[in-house]
Image (cartoon, rainbow, N blue to C red):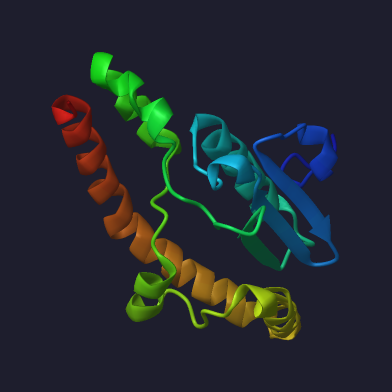
Length: 175
């Protein structure tokens, strides 16, 4: 029998540059690493994030994932509009880009919708994250696992078809 196939890797082995990926104890952290452009998401960011998210989900030692942005000015400004210009000439490539894309929701809207619990000033962010991570790691793991199953169920039921329709429509109609 060979070694386990579905396990996490050491973050440094990925060689990411558009994001930083770190693990410490039961915590994994993904940092958008393009502060010079307000951490805009381009194809490289999306591709690296997908790899890091998959790795974190396979790593049994990871109990909490923190997503943050480098620099002081923005978490993530959204899509890299310079990169988006190419889709004017080749709209079908937009569909390919959307495969990697996950929609960034503004903090206040996410708070209103109940996706997040806190919005804190930058100066208090690290302390708040540490407090939440500590609470989550020490909760009964079954609660977190069941909650994740429920979220994944509803995401799979409606999110993927919705994004698929949007991706197709925008691929055809973007001008």
